[in-house]
Length: 240
Image 1 (cartoon, one colour):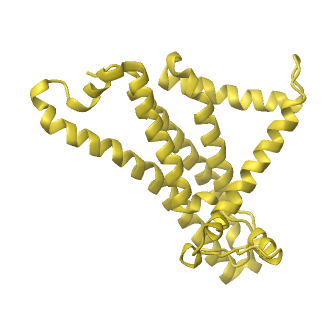
Image 2: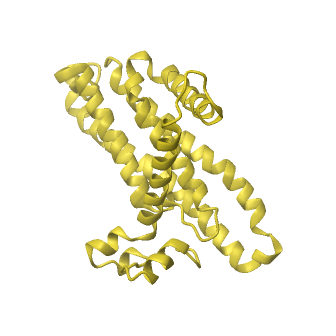
């Protein structure tokens, strides 16, 4: 689903770049790199880099306003994560915080006229989900070595032939669970907003949906992060 007007793709197209609005029209590698969800994801990452660089230059012992805000937000996320994963999983915090902030801002970006939510495209949510699931398996191997296989074989050895394929399918299904849930909710919200803007935009009909979108955008980012934390916690703990 595309917005009626997407500012950045229009600007890049005016500059002579081969921008297309849907994957069906993308036939070259460059066109695939210039799809709307990729363009706006890179815009968001550029904003993060600039904010981090600006705030990082002014880190002080006594926090200023910007530093105090980011320390409060990141500290709260870290404390919440430690409560689920445990102290031994503290090293996972940068990934969880990055994904959480990226997904939240991506969700909200689609509510700005002329912008596009990267998370309303399945490719974006799928990439985030693959990172989480693949890294959780690597964390399990890091903590348990070859014994991590016990997470797939069940509590008793004779159940292993039955449990192993079920557990493998279950772990792979985590990718679908994380990606499709996030994509479906944000895509549906974007679709409803586009219809409301088209039918009754001048009468402010989209405003109630936009207010609801602020709530659902946060909830979807929160659910994604909590599920990710639970996957990491399961990989770290001993198999039973």
